[in-house]
Image (cartoon, rainbow, N blue to C red; front, top):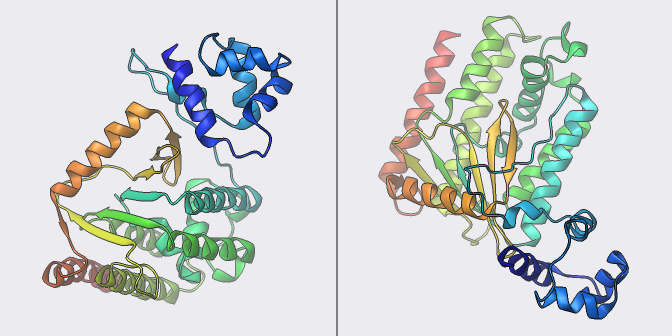
Length: 321
């Protein structure tokens, strides 16, 4: 009954309807309230069918309460296909996730192999470039095969949604762990498009490098203030890790339950609420932070050196182009 005890605790903790939990379950399962109360007291087990009906109706992942003895962990994955409409839906799903995180006072820890894509969304040119790159270079969108990058061909609805995403992300408490190579992905994408003639105008490559440097300047200021907002709210910590991170991992910690996202297929992700996996991820990130240098607040010397190295990488690319 251990799984049921945890399951019932979760139902009671997350129940927000004005109707009582017992009344709602009685109607849903077609059983008496006395039968429901016996289940809520863990005197009678839920049948598999009953548990699945509850999970389907109230969007609960039952597997998060399991103890997987055979090193098997379930993950959620929604594949993204090419096309403006599908990419816009993808951005909508990110926005919805961040909205829920904001309402739940979630703390986000981001182990960043690449600079978190949210930051790119603050600049329309960078946001448009990232979206175009994903569609053409990663998703192989056939409608873009004959097109080169031009910010004017990007769906303005996607740019608007990207801006709304960074606005939400800036309101969340977050800890980011970078390496000196976190900028490599963005720079290599700009170089690839430049060297393969994928820019409508060759000057766009240099405009993107300027926008990337401006993005870093903005993040540097946020690190200095320990805030992503233009006020005194402290909601941002930035660390420089000398240990290679390996992939982009996000750990969302909340009172109602934790969740982990791991990068997959360049920009997509798989996620899980599995308690043990979340604990392991939290432990790994805490260990990573202990071995990292904090570069916000009073760490002026480390902050200057860290960002100077990335500015030099941008300048090196500018010279190559």
